[in-house]
Length: 441
Image 1 (cartoon, rainbow, N blue to C red):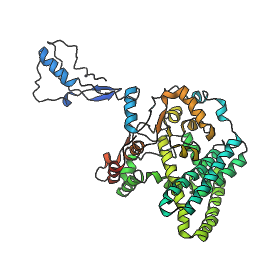
Image 2: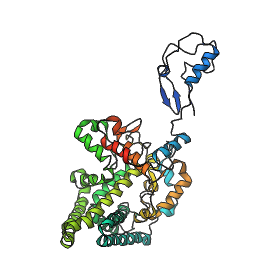
Image 3: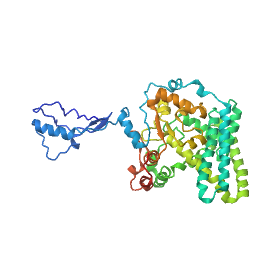
Image 4: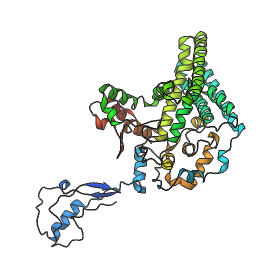
């Protein structure tokens, strides 16, 4: 706890020295030090005397020198308070500027980069059997148990995504053709074109938490927020109550437009799109033919929405928090973005198993070449060598509430400004979330 009066007030002054100069003092907070403004002090009953008695000076000093909590991320107590406020277990201290990504990678054991075919195909078996079991539950469950069956099946099919994700990072098999085939097939039930996603996702890793360049969750630009009342209303819902499904918009807008890809990528993009459209053209009519339109909703659409809940939730938790900045290209630091700007989050064990530990996410950003089944060993190494810099959480209501109600519009100094701060009269979705979401951590 610290509080420093500005240089025109000196606590060491004697009773016959004048502590008040004629200029007014600006208020400023820096590195946990509070500089108080004369204008901000109680003026009533205070005369600007040339000489103050010891008794009077003591009174002024007591009124002014109020302890203020240090507000620097370098301060452990401050980070602990932030952790509790945001729903984190730990907020890491800032990584020094001279640490590079190579420094971090060099501390990882070589074995975490090794591909194990048995473990890789075991993950395929887990996803295939859990997905098949989910479809069986949907077919047999009474209507009141269908939400549970959909939750399981949506989580199981998320495992397919993680397998395709490993293939895209060349961490599934030593045979690259096998990876392309498995990745394409794993993405088909999700109607996700493999190659377009791979190209965009590579840029996310190369530019994690870089303003404009990162292809994942960008904060909203203030200019965009002010551009249109219609957009402002829509984005308040999109970054508010519908945010756990906003990956659907990302899926539609980013992966099917050929104009957004480099000429060297277009051929492979077209092949992936052809596979997706073929699956839709053959698979969907078969589902409707066998089970009807309601069967298509039960067996495909609801698990698809379950998958996107996890897709959106995982990705925003990985990189979104009030203390994690997005930076412009000239300020961006790779090691800080990947180690300091990525969050490790623990989920219930059944989710971790079905999703192949994708939320052990910090080592994945240190090196995408680490297979999913080695992420826990890599994270343990990071904890041993870089533990004080890590952001760690357990999935909880307070964590989600913080993201959904605070992390909205970009601000260079604060990182984020909430919608209800900028447009309180229009922020009904955010006020609703603050009212109804529990605050358990």
